[in-house]
Structures are given as C-alpha cells and as structure tokens.
Amino acid sequence: MAFTEFRTLDEKSLVEYIKATPALSDKIGNNFDDLKIKEVGDGNLNFVYIVVSPAGSFVVKQAIPYVRCIGESWPMTKERAYFEALALREHGRLSPENVPEVYHFDRTMSVIGMRYLEPPHIILRKGLIAGIEYPLLAEHISDYMAKTLYHTSLLYRTTTEHKHDVAEFCGNVELCRLTEQVVFSDPYKVSDFNHCTSPYLDRDAEAIREDDILKLEVAELKSKFCERAQALVHGDLHTGSVMVTRESTQVIDPEFAFYGPMGFDIGAFIGNLILAFYAQDGHADQGNDRKTYKEWILRTIKETWNLFYKKFTALWDEHKDGSGEAYLPGIYNKPELHQLVQRKFMQDLFHDTLGFGAAKMIRRIVGVAHVEDFESITDASKRAQCERPALNLAKMLLKERRNFQSIDEVVSAIQQLQ
Image (cartoon, rainbow, N blue to C red; front, side, top):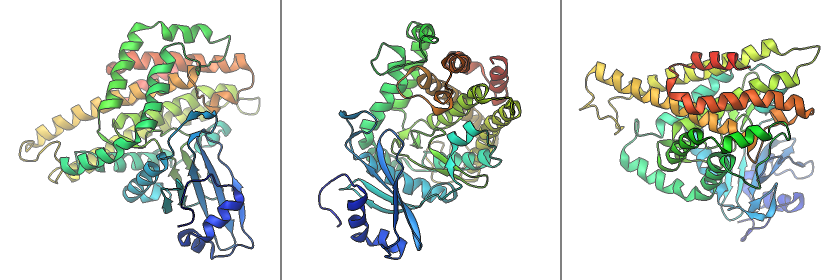
C-alpha cells in the first residue's frame, strides 16, 4: 500500500506513489529517470496527471474532498472515485473498444490509474468548436450506449443481479444529488449559482423561472431520474466526457454513474450535439461559414439515435429468450407481441431522451456550469444570439417531446428554429 491515509497528490508525492504501486510502475518499466508528469485536470472536480516515460504511459486521476473549481467551501465526497472505477470496469467489459482500461484503483487515496489516450486524441467538445468532422463518431457512441445500457438492464439480466448492482451504486448519492440540483432545480428558481449571458438573456432566464408548464415537465423528469433504476448510466455523457480522433471514440469520466433512466445518457449526448450546432454561427468566420459543418452535426444527431435504435433492438432480439426478466419469454411468446413491446419501449425511451436532452441544454445556458461551445464566443451579444434559439428549442422539446415520433422530425425542428 503506497499511503495508508488520504492525501492530495502533487508531482513529487505522485512519484513516490507510483514507485510503491507495481501495477503502475510496471507500465513505465520502473524507469523513473526520464519520467514526465503533467497535471491537466481542467474539470470542475479532480486532479488528473499524465505520466509518460520512454517505456510507457498512463493517467492518474485523484478525487479530492471538495469541488475543485469552487474550493473547500463546497465539500464533495471523494468516494466518487470508487463509483467511477466500478463504472469504467463494467462499461469497459461491455464496450472495450470505447472505454480506456483501468490498471489500478486505490479506494483510500481515491486514485484511479488508467490508459493514457495519447495525442491526437482530444476532447470531443474542443473538436466540435474547431469544426472537425468525426466520420465514425455516431457509429462508435451508439455502439457504446447500446451495449452498456442493454446489458445492465432487466431486458438482459435477472432482477436479483440487477438489484444487487442497483444497491451498490445507490452509494453514489452525493453526485446524483448534485445533478438533481444543477439540472432539475436551479435553472427553475433564483439561485446564487445560476448565471447567463447578461443582460441579453436576463429576460429569457426569468421566463424559465415563470413557466409553469416547463416546471411540471421537469418535475416528471426529475422523478424519473431519482426513481427509475433502468440501467447503469454514465450519468454525465456530454461532449466533454468523450475523447476522439477520426478513428477512435473513448468515453471517460463516469464518476456520476448510477442506475438510472437510459434516456439520461442518450439525451445528454444528443443535447450537447445540439448545443454545438447552435454555437457554430459564433465560430464562423470569413474563411468558413460553418454551414457544411452544421449539416454534419445534424447528420450525426440523426445517425446517433438511428444506429442506437438498430443496435439496441438487435441485442434485444438476439437475447429475447435469455435470462432477462423484464419480458419473460413464456409470456411474450408471439413475434407480434415482442414487436409491440419493443416499439412501445423504444418510443418511451425516445421521449425520455428528448426530455433529458432538453433539460441538459437549459441548464448549460442559464444554470451553474456552462459549455465551452458558447463560452468561447467572446462577443457577448453574438454569444446570446447563438444561445437564445438553443434555449427556445430546448423549452419546446421539453414541453412537446411526446409529439415527436422520429429523430428526423427533431432535426427539422432544429433547422426551423435557427
């Protein structure tokens, strides 16, 4: 054991830690002479170190007992590292091509050692801001979501297995409560943490706080988020939690993982793609009006849902006579009944996806933590011009999500609301 009690690692103590941890020191061939360590944690919560030597590399992520971007005034359990390691291992088992391998986990120190996603991997959000097309993104992310959500649900598993894992992940209550606050509560009331592109969006933010229909809809989504243990969801699957190259898509940072509604993950991803779409006009310049790129984003939104639908239902068809207890084969024994059940399930999931995606969009414009897609547009009035149609679309989707039958209809609505 490297350290017997928790302490925050710095570059010097990290070297000691690696020396005392064979699972990590072996990865760099025990060569400490040419070791390069760089702290890159630009997130809100953790310290992240990249460790590179001529013989190998890895990443060390340490959770600290407070919100890093706020400071010690906002305490936060470091146990989140345990749930992140658990989710990385489980999702990595189910979708190994799209999740970095975990080499080491230390619960006392809240440290995870894992594969370093070397350059040219970058955060997807940064790639979208730069206007880079990723031809395999929809293929890869739909694969990841279909495999992880299907195999951790009752469509595949027994209720005994499912309850066991639900109970385990119930311990991640503090991060779930953080989501409850910032996604489903703060944007709909006056909160010290809220901010928006002022003064341009002040009235828009106020309108959200006064919209009773919106509040009824978001209450229903909050109830689903808190009560529906449908599958092991990543819990924070936005474009900042995905690292990409043109050939590779890697999902990282599942510290918010818990058993929740499947649509929360799918919605988070699609909602963030929609935000990226609306931000493009703010990044356009004389050399590139970004119109072709916006079309690529819309195609990716369509493909993400359509491929997910196809892969998820294919897994379901393949295992329909297996041990999953949601729809017992002895009862749902006619092909037409199986299809009926499947259609209903997928339609409900689609509407959940739109609702959660919309809620995530709203909170990124008038809540506490915004997105770089908009924040990197330096001219505030221009930024607000990009944010307002995104906000209007999100409000409409949240209220009218049940009227949409296909992702094509959603994309048409996005094109109309520009």
